[in-house]
Image (cartoon, rainbow, N blue to C red; front, side, top):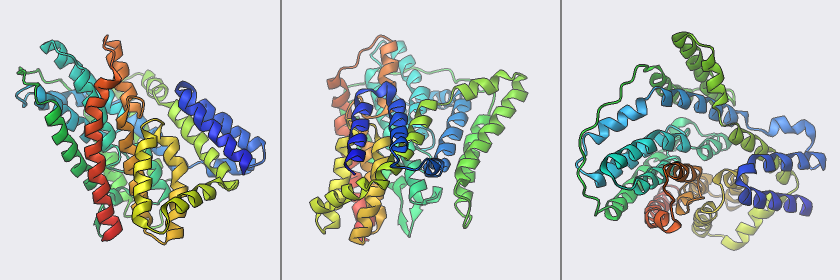
Amino acid sequence: MLPALITFAVTYLLMIFLPKYRAYVALASAALFVISGTLPLGDVLTEIDWNVILMITGTMGIVDLFIESRMPSRLADMILNRVPDVKWAIIALSVFAGFISAFVDNVATVLMVAPVAITISKKLEISPVPSVIAIAIASNLQGAATLVGDTTSIMLGSYANMDFLDFFWMNGRPGMFWIEQIGMVAATAVLLWVFRGYRQKIGSFNITEVRNYFPTYLLLGTVILLILASFIPEKPAATNGIICISLMIIGIIYEMIRQRKTAVFKKTIMGLDYFTILLLASLFVVIAGIRQAGVIDAIASLYLRIGGNSPFIMYTILLWSSVLFSAFIDNIPYVATMLPVVSGIALNMNVDPNLFYFGLLGGATLGGNLTPIGASANIMGIGILRKQGYEVKNSQFTSISVPYTLAAVSTAYVLIYILWGIL
């Protein structure tokens, strides 16, 4: 177990300090587990969760087509024409970004909405930094609201055998969607206070023209089909992934016919985030390797020793430690590591695992908002601002993100325990 633990620890450290090479570090680590004989070569393909890989790949392709259709810009324009001043424009954009992010990848959401905030800022001659930060952190918050909102949600859904509707209503109780919405209300109230001095008036905007509504129907169709699939008993494990991939292919074929260009296929395929796909596939192998070596059981035992026999204390430790860890490290490898740990803890304590699952998801997703490097959406937003000539100071980011995050996490912390620890 010791060599496996050392390999895993080194892998984690390298992924923290070499974020640009994170996928390659995970791939090298996975190869090392196989070469060392810790994980048999024949088990590699079966250990990769292909449902997750297919869902992420398909969703990426559909989102790319959705962005190209300019529908997000049109929706943003419609919202902005109904707000009186800059404060409410920032609030509207953050809520709008959060709504999109419940169904679309967080980074893609920032790519959609941040340019609108920058355009407004240029017209009003104000800094776009506060509004882009608000968009990024709202995107992260709502990523845990649905099965397709974030990679971590997809991973949890696949691991715990949850369907799309389980995030709305499960076992007679409200799911993560409603918890996230109440958390969003609390966090948005904080934003209203933070931006209370932004009272500059806003003029009207021309509504962006959308010439192709098919990608919008495609995205809505993805959500509807995932809901319908949740009613199918004993369906194949990769059902959700097949749905997403199939709709992506339909979208590509439609665009090729509409534009009469085969370049659409190349553009969409080349636009997929292969870095994240490779990272996830490699991490599945790494986690399988440390599980085979007994590391997962050892981590679970450590948590049990710290938490004792109290489900409340254990839940508290899991959620707030997830917030802390995710503030500094990517939540994808963290959640991938902790899912089997959480499952083992729940089994040992004879507790409903959903209490710990949702605590892990809420903490890991929201914790990334505490720092500029805690989530990919934050890094993307800061990168967009840098291209516009704006350097974001840590103090600028945390002055908005910390109160926002604490409001959302505290709300989720209380609600999750009431719904899944008491009722």
